[in-house]
Length: 205
Length: 293
Image (cartoon, rainbow over all chains, first blue to last red; front, side, top):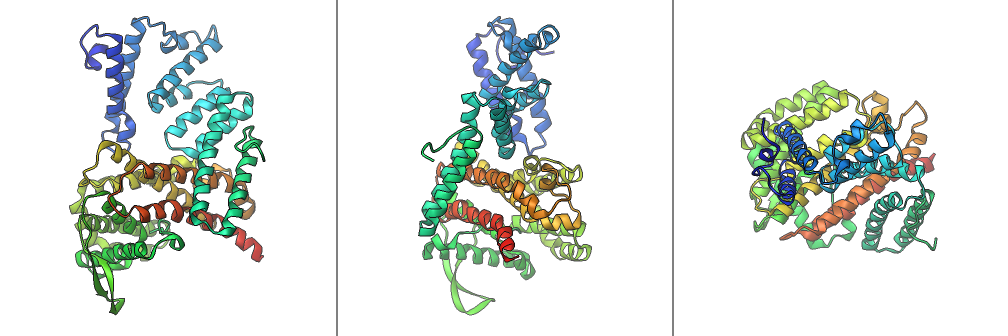
């Protein structure tokens, strides 16, 4: 059994900064996504698991005030379900920040109580995985469940705005008169959709 | 093969259109030279775009010369002279055509499928020999695709993944000396191009698949329960349209980050205007039918 430091290719007792740096580089290298169409995929996935375990172990023992990272989230589930969930959410967000949506998705799938944040995070995972239709659905559900949350609304609006800007660009390039009408229509449609879901691209309409 | 990747002619300059034609003709001639005259029948827009896209990125200087052709023996037309990108595109097109016939043999018409496979068999072997790894990966991804179809995968985005990966594999041509960032961009564009083609094809085939009782991810994703197809299309239209428009917007964004040595205008025309035009045409098709009723 390799020590967690060995897994990350470091000497025993390397500093937290070094651990983080090595971890980030290894994630980049072994991210299963890069091997999606490759026989090495299984190997990469296994390696990723080892790396994640090693990183979590080191971070845990470093007592980095990172209760949320550790398995405590799971252990507490019986006594305090709410606490356990939010702990996992922190880990999910952390994984997403490292572009490790593979781990994030696995963590999310373990959660049974699915609130607005769960749907929002699931949306982010899908967005990163290029599953845009799914991402859109999850964001929309999150906004419907909690219409007051600006973060969820922003995620949904960003997707809509991106598509709308592209459409506008296409109409602009085609640049004929009747297209202008369509362009306004598209803008109006986007805005209406957006308003339905609680957002607003164009406040004047 | 599908015919979705084509330029939007009204906004193309004539000189750009000539270059596109030159690639099309060049590919046709290259297919004939390497794989025999019959293979020229399976010339397609996807492979033309592949040749154009790769040449645009690579440092190879293209040579275009006027040549005559069987289809038009008396008038000379500009033809792209064979180069690495062009012959790579014809190898890939042979491999895909062969698999297409295998598909037809399985799902539609065993006679046509087997005949096609027989006719293309020799060319396929030759192409595989040239790109053994690519051929293997393509085969693997296609069986993944079939696997998902057999399992009746109920999510469109997920069902599109093997095909998206297939496009990614095809566009990563090893002889391109690209830096890491550019490679990432090419991967992203190719992957999402594959997504686009798969999903729009699923939408386009709804009626046919329903009639034949074939698998279609859209029917399962939106719990089709035997209602009128037009009504069903109405329900899913917005979602499909948004999903695809967003996909195209990301392709277009990534395309702007990529440094093309040449052909940038044509490539952008195809990726932005051409694909969106296909989307519009296919989404509007049933509306037009409705009006005529």
